[in-house]
Length: 565
Image (tube, rainbow, N blue to C red; front, top):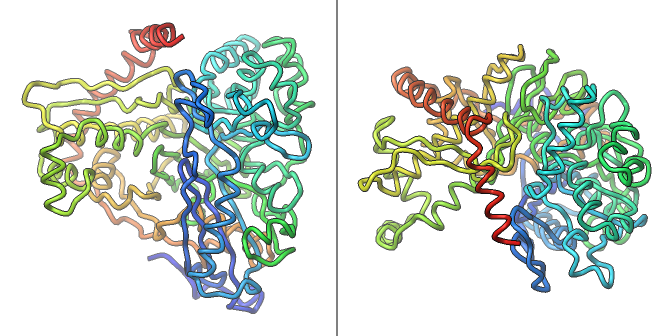
């Protein structure tokens, strides 16, 4: 376990080993808080709070129906995490509140909140509770694909310089596409929106009373490159009413990662039970804060944060234009290095979907008798297979493709089914498909001249040993595993320690607080060779369905939309 506490100096910890920080990780379905000791990264207490409204993808709380591809949330659920998970974590840690010197947060991105000038979410206003566009647009809201397509086409036509920093395409998940959808589908709510705010910044605003835009989301999700957003002329060409979007609703002072956003307000202190005035760190993204938590502070160390989706982040001393990357930002993860982001829109979500829809009653009975859940039972069955034994190939596009195709109108594919195909066959094929997707991303980086030397996995899926070994075999790389079950929350806490002055920078914090075991899974040459053959078939399907040879997925998407209208 890489946790070099012996390198910690009294200077770095302020001479006091008994101080602590809190990290809060806002995920897709819940928020998790962790209390961390500053001198060595020990996680002393954790708590989780599930969002009461979860994800609104079918209807609003009042029953208003939502179209396909929508994913919304209710911002008060985020405040409830502060009210419940933070005090519970502190109580479990057994530390005194006055020993806590700072709090840091991270969020799924791009998750956008339309608010008034004082930060009030529009969905909290009378008369707007039945308006879908007044709610938080979660990262996996993909209903702005049409707007994203236009943004990309116009940027390519005009040769906008920022486009190549995003691999040639921006995503429907990002700030501009979602804002343009808001304007074009509900102009009234758009015009009442005074600030278009990343949830990562909104929660910091609520904690310290100051709106500070963080450099990470601005660069990766807000097309902020070289000190500027897309021009007014470009935005006007998209839609004349969109011309002043940046100046009216988006533009705001930008702070660097690990900086102090402000002090905890009296109101937030009452929510959390933490001392008023302690350091509140600038916001960050769940994937990006995880890299230093996993000790990945050197070029070429790619961290894959695997949960409902997977985000691949890496720092490099090489600047390249990687097809389909979610962005390359100077200092976007670590100061002095180019920070890269790529990702897969569906991973754990795909496995979860299959266990809900493809797990027959007889399997459920056997799993219960064995004391296993559906994932454990199917994994045990699948682990007994040889590579290729099931005769299947799947495409992992059930939530669209984020990298390298950047097309959320794509959908899942399963080829090779027969009347002998069993649930464990499909389950393993889906596990493998996500590994093939990660290999596609790695190859895109290396083809662009950005080396990927090591893969470190974080997130809840690290518990699945079969999945981890598949990734090692498919990618032909040693796999490290983060030494924390709360990687993003630990990373957020580490940034809070830097913001509070306990460490000079995040690299110093990572030396003492970061945790990872290197090379836990090694690729097996025989299995890797077998996977090379299957990967070749995956790439054939990938390019056939994803690069325009067959537009059947897009046609089906249009047919579904027409039928749902």
